[in-house]
Image: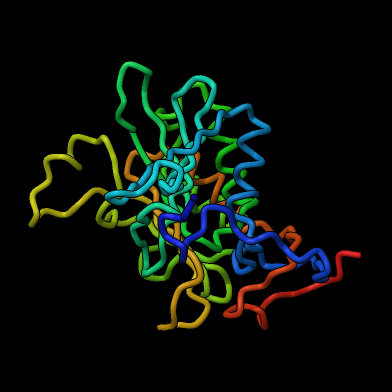
Length: 273
């Protein structure tokens, strides 16, 4: 018998009702993930030739017959052909939270195959648009050295301001927001539990300021629950974050059948047929 480890966070999102009407919607940073964040990313990684593995754990009660042992599905791991980068669907397996939302995807990269440790990791909650995360992973896959930065922090801000976002009035060189002030990018202290191989992250004392990394989130209504969040470790190359930022702030519409309740009235819609 098979049972989900955490039923409230299923391994596979529910299949969409094909009878639901489809719309082209924008802005995409408020469009959610259409309930397909796993499928959208997994399909992209399969197209890139990444290998997928499902890590399972078992549980057998005392005096339970072997055929009745429960198999608990856990993390789905996708690994690049050179094994230098990987992506984990962790929503079904004891996810930790960012901005009060559970982490759905964790993406990591290492310097070489001799070390099992990730050089950096990035984390994405549900309702991050799947198209945006897919673009980030395609850019990561295309790099020979996933840990080497190809530019500075200005690349991230240039990527969003090119699409009409505004520099943050309080930190113009380290932050930006969309024109409706619903979605944000900020370079600041990395939240707890964000893994990074920078030695300073390993030796910092409790009373010392942490390393800076990029954080992005959507807060459609000030003070209300956020729609999604993304956290990038301090060692994630700025140019890779810029790919995510450019895709997120793009003015191109995205196809959706399921619209987030918190942003439904703020989305522009056109029937897909």
